[in-house]
View (tube, rainbow, N blue to C red):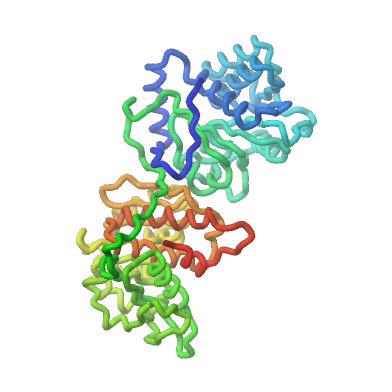
Amino acid sequence: MIHLQSLNADCAWPLYGRDSIRALEVLLQARSASPLMQQAGLATAQLAMAVAPHAQHIWIATGPGNNGGDGLEAAFHLHQWGKSVQVSMTVPAEALPSDARAAWQRAHAAGVPIADGLPSDGLKNLGQQDLVIDALLGMGATRRLQGDMLTWVQAINQSQAAVLAVDVPTGLDADSGQFLGQSQDIECVRADHTLTFIAAKPGLFMGHGRDMCGQIWLADLGFTHSTGGSEPAVWLNPRTRHQEKSHASHKGSHGDVAVIGGEADLHGMGMTGAAVLAATAALHAGAGRVILSLLSGQATLSATPDLMQRSWQSLDLERLHVVCGCGGGASVKTILPEVLSRSMQLVLDADGLNALSQDPALQSLLRQRTQDHPTVISPHPLEAARLLNTSTTQVQSDRLKAAQDLVELYQCTVVLKGSGTVIAAPGQTPRINPTGNGRLATGGTGDVLAGLIAARMAQCLAPFEAACTAVAQHGQVANDWPNGQALTASRLAQRLV
């Protein structure tokens, strides 16, 4: 039996890019008594039996490479176990690479029904209790789907049956989580389950990977850290429990957070709500004291009475954990030199980042901040593109590189928000956060995250750990949100502990 593991947010799983996986494949094959393809096929068959034990029909779509060989090996085992299996091949057997051709010979000799091309009636004979195994393209695919391959993917997605993807859903880039060729259309298998081999890949947890992979499973095929090979490029960010406050503590034990933002016009209208959300989040997350400093210079009645309200000029920035930029508008640019120069610890977000991207002098001040006065920046992809002087498309095509480029450029902790938020910092292996869902795609949730990060820093977590912990919790609250109840930023902030 092959060891299968369900990947979840409770553990820090190592993630490897395609180049590292290829190197590990060579290393493992040299040490293995049986071909890795046979092990992968057996693992696929075992998971198929586990997720669809009552399937009357199993249809396996196999592609032109080793991913297709994995599917053929799975067909061999499922047929041996008495399951009704039909294999469809996109290319003739003689066009397969040697290992995959050997898998075809095993399946053919065992009597597995194998045909070229899609069934003439598509997949109409498959019901909801049946199973499709996607073994078309693996992690090596990089080009946009076209022609017959796209037709096959569309046929899989139109079937009623459950779908199990082998290694990675066909059409998904295993490194970036984007559709192959940066397609803007959904040209990817939408799987209910994805079984990945040796180690998990970053793209399964970023971008469209979160929507296309379903439940993610791992068959390590004998790989462990003691096996050797390169270190992981990134880790999956684990869900952590925040420490309860000790009985002997007091408000001064848990740090003071100041939120500076909330520009308003002459009529008191504007973006004060963003600053209020960040401050409310810091308060509910357990900061000892939270000060709201509106750039409008006015107090707001929309804030909870638990928040102290003061002008930013009166703040002792050298003793505060500062959040700056939420709803700051154009006014934030005038105060950023002092905030960057004096704040003990700083979370820079939203309009603070926009101002930073436009002013080399502010960028220089950020880089001059020391380890004793750390900074976390939390851009969404468009803000990251501005900070890097590139496009959103370029950021999304390699979110890990974008986050690390920001670290290198600004010498601070970076939280690159989005599907699979990336957390990176100087001297740290980056993390991808697996918690969260589309409910967070509403105005103000980023302000809540900024306040939460500041609260964790105020509670003596190092900036990288504070960011990792806050991002995981922020997403988990969304995961745990009751069905049928709208998630708004204000409700999210009040649900934090």
